[in-house]
Length: 235
Image (cartoon, rainbow, N blue to C red; front, side, top):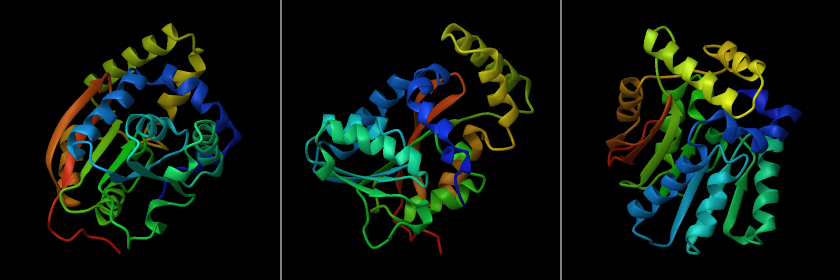
């Protein structure tokens, strides 16, 4: 189980500058995600695991929202994680963040977290079930997971319509046609969309329950669920 290595390229440096132009509702997704976490945790002092922390957007939002939250950021890409570290340092909030520059399955399991966030990451992971199981292993029973991903089946006409919609969005943002073409060519190669039904099945198998949608913009879907009480499967 690993996130695609293309995030180790120098191209990752341009991520923060362009991601909002590639993902419809990018900033709203992050705002509503922190709202969702705040509701689930009811404002309590908490330790929150952020899987795919590179870029730092969700970490910045959480640090600014609640002074009693401690964040652990996990990302295997040094380029992406350095970007997040720089943004946190600008806020002078480094003492509230723990960093792990490694794949999720290498992160210690002795500490269990009160919540987990993973936004726009799982569709870069081929073995998504194992990825979800590894998150479950690191959560307290009943802890929420907030997850956002590219949903849909690329073989269906509906997904083709969503692709067309995305191309129109990117064009309006001023991105060149090659940006959308590159995204489309990576489908099934380094990007693995999954239907909401399939994601729900994988979450259930990984030990999550109370699975509910909280966000959608085009092909981007946000889901919140809770870690069940049964023992999480894993290595």
